Image 1 (cartoon, one colour):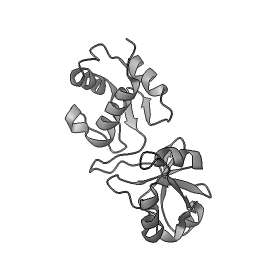
Image 2 (cartoon, rainbow, N blue to C red):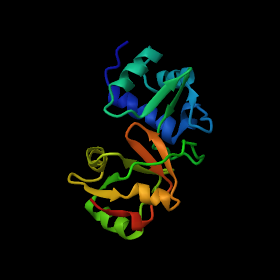
Image 3 (cartoon, rainbow, N blue to C red):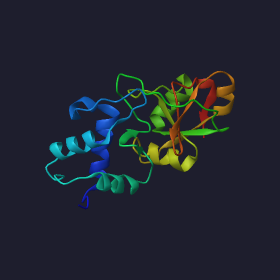
Image 4 (cartoon, one colour):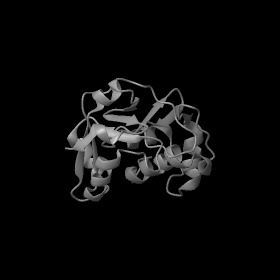
Length: 183
């Protein structure tokens, strides 16, 4: 089977693994992993257009995505970041790069510079390793997003914990305003 709408599939997988696994009959372990076969069975059941969906179809559709948002390993799958489930997902802590970036709307930027970055409905704040990635994320909020520069290494040295989100994404519980500035 060739998935005719890989974007829709990716969004559905994101909903299942990031936001509402129970709706799909899934349970996430402490690191966010779910059984791959159970997810595929749930996707077949939820979407009439995917009755023959298999693991290869899913891998192919997710591989075509611009960003690496999921990983599949040993019969399991997980979202790398973006969780809003009540149970925290454990991610490895790490030493961040010198600078990380956050894209947002110009209206939100002023408040963030004043009050700091908070996860706002997600488990953690999402940061990009480069301005282009942050700009892409910020376009979800505004046609002309504003970039915020996070002095991540200094924040980390001051005790702010950073977590690897996968690919070019880093995560933090929050970032105090003193480490955030307009890019």
